[in-house]
Amino acid sequence: MVDLEVDDGLAIITIDRPHARNAISLETMDQLDKALDGAEGAAALVLTGGGDRAFVSGGDLKELAALRTEEQASAMAFRMRSICDRIAGFPAPTVAALNGHALGGGAEFAVAADIRIAADDIKIGFNQVALAIMPAWGGAERLVELVGYGRALLLAGSGRILTAAEAERIGLIDQVILRASFAEQWRLLARSLATTPAGQVKRVMRGVPTTEAVAAFARLWASDEHWAAADKVMKKAT
Image 1: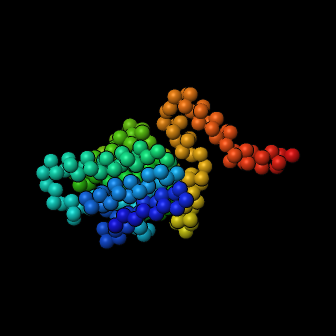
Image 2 (image 1 turned 90 degrees about the horizontal axis):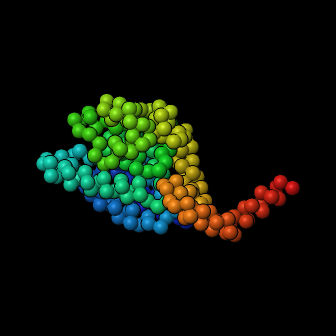
Image 3 (image 1 turned 90 degrees about the vertical axis):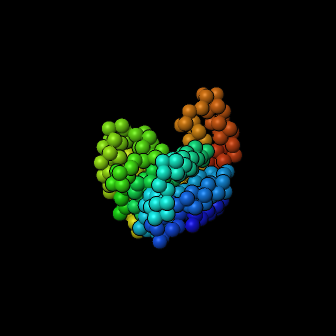
């Protein structure tokens, strides 16, 4: 089951399939697409998993075992890649809150988001080679962007699984949080992204014409929210 929660501009998509360690089946893909439809217009989007054992453990091998031909495998890969591409192209900031392990396709799902935060006891790895296959949901290319070509090839080529601390050191995870406070902290971080001009910042970082970037800044500068915040700062300084 895929659950969508929308609260005051913050959308949270949760893959909640405890019996399959939140693995992704074809039905899960359909539900993810519908959840992304429902999240349109949100000021920030979080992707997470149910429970504390797995974020996403990859594709659901028991259900995907029926796909035996190259044509079927290609259709499945294109289907899930299109979902990851939707996440990567989401207009507002996106956060993967790694409540549990992110392995194989789960790591690919995680790197589709802009930001990855993780509980300190999780592991992450592009270990598809253990099944004599390779990443096909766009994760290999996104891994290169995050950690560099050589390191990405080493990780995906060897299937090495990293601790949260190791992944943070190389830039694969952006922030590691103690398990005891993880659920609270990722919501606070996501809420802050949903209630600040982070969406405008994301658009500029993606590369927009200078005139458009300056126009976005000027709109924010002239807004009531900016001057209310500026007045507080100026009053503190006097």
